[in-house]
Length: 482
Image (tube, rainbow, N blue to C red; front, side, top):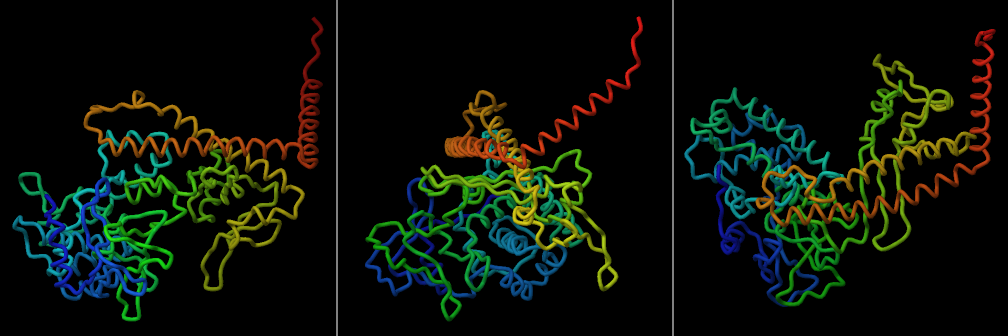
């Protein structure tokens, strides 16, 4: 289904009709950025640049209210919704997309202001989930390679689940399943686009939480933002100038999407990398040892995704890294780690984690602190540093192996958009440079730990034990009298 569109010049009329005010700014096309907000008059710090009524704010509460008005949508929401705020909002947007379509379809929705507003939203976003297969090949060797593959698998399965559930709802069956010509009113491509629009435009409001806010979601990001959003006493969402800002007429108004977000997260969620970001960081998944008999128990008890986070201030020499799971990963029963299945007060069974006979289930992500008072602390830290260093080295080697596009199985390089290729190349440079610095820093830390007297004593005892074992094996060999 082709997404319907309206020219951005028609937005002021829609805003006026729906009670949105922005007397001193306008939404316009900005070269290289798409839509943005520009100052067009004298701005006062106490006067909002934009004011959006609470009734237009789109979040899970608004979706539930809409379901009360539309029984067909309520059927769909009850069948596949209520999993997350994101999915509920996507289902709502899917209805608006269908209603905005010019192709005849079954009556499945009630029009509201978002039915028209969705026509102003871009028809694509430069997030990797909307890249072509050839364009996504440029992400090989970056931290986004596995993340985007996992996202594509998850979002495809999600839409299949939505469509399967809709097969038992007559009106929705006609909307979500293809016509005889292979097209449909709402396709997987539509679902992926709506997901991209949600991720790139959702705001974390102080009172309303995760929400999409029309018109304010047109504002671009800057490290040196000139404005911020808030909710006033009437629960309206307002855009306000920062106290220290001085916005001239004709100047773009910007907000911050997040100062400390990694380059990979910015590209994944918003479709660009901020070249002026002051922090470089990287998150990599971490797998437990294949031969660890406690691996499944560790993963179950840890609950969060095992990962390694590394970071440094841009242009600075100080680096940092953290990996709570790596500490759990490097502990075993001989160190004092234990898992027990205990019965709770209501007869249920719980997996509890013990460290040196102390129940530390609620502190499972804090083993770096828990081990400090024990003699094995330095040795465990050495194991953790080695594990993290090897994981980063593995990632660096993979990034370097795909550094040139000639190593990629691209079918047609001419069809790859420059923006995608350049964004992937910038991400690779940032992550490669960060990995090299952190790996060197970890090597220095590893050598210091190897020189620790407790580690030296432990390694010496291990060598002695191995020598004794070799001697015993030699003495047990039969004499050769030949």
